Image (cartoon, rainbow, N blue to C red; front, side, top):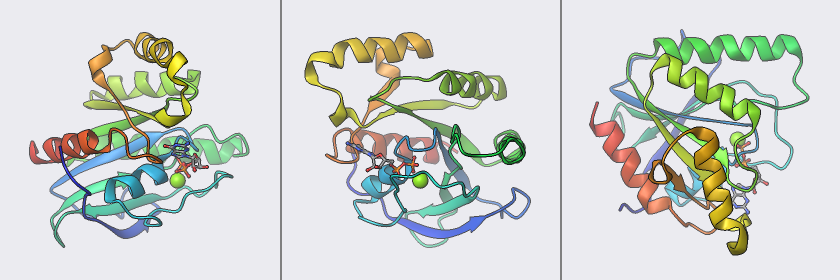
Length: 198
Ligand SMILES: Nc1nc2c(ncn2[C@@H]2O[C@H](COP(=O)(O)OP(=O)(O)O)[C@@H](O)[C@H]2O)c(=O)[nH]1
Ligand SMILES: [Mg+2]
């Protein structure tokens, strides 16, 4: 179990080609509004390292964060969220090309943290993304967000639903609340272990 991660925002990239080589990298993938930015802030125990929003933006950027010491070469990459209804077909197509390039070509990519909204459960788009990630063959760590929003009376049922739909075991998903901090120490340890394996 680990305390707050030292996370430094480096910069945003608009293309995969522009990315420099890194030693080891993990990518955050998830529906727009799933709680990615909040989770980054929670992992670092900071309030506004990553911008959070009630109205999901349409910005399609690869946001790079360095983990640990300066020039550690270990990155956490915040990928653009999917499923934002107000995005045009053309914009969506651009998004999936960029994401495909990133996921299929990034040599240092040690794995993907796939965020699923715990308050909603896996959506059809989430399941499409899982199929894609499995096809690419990347190690996936499932993270169910917003656990504080699931009433305790519904928790067991929701946990079963999440694991059944994703086709995984209960122990394969980490439940977290960026708001309350639940599950964050376990997730930080997982992140450190995944990055060090590379
Ligand atoms: N209750 C609760 N709300 C959360 C949590 N994490 C994120 N949210 C809310 O979900 C919305 C989207 O969060 P954000 O981090 O911007 O999502 P992103 O679009 O995936 O980056 C915001 O209104 C957050 O306050 C959580 O753990 N608990
Ligand atoms: Mg965000």
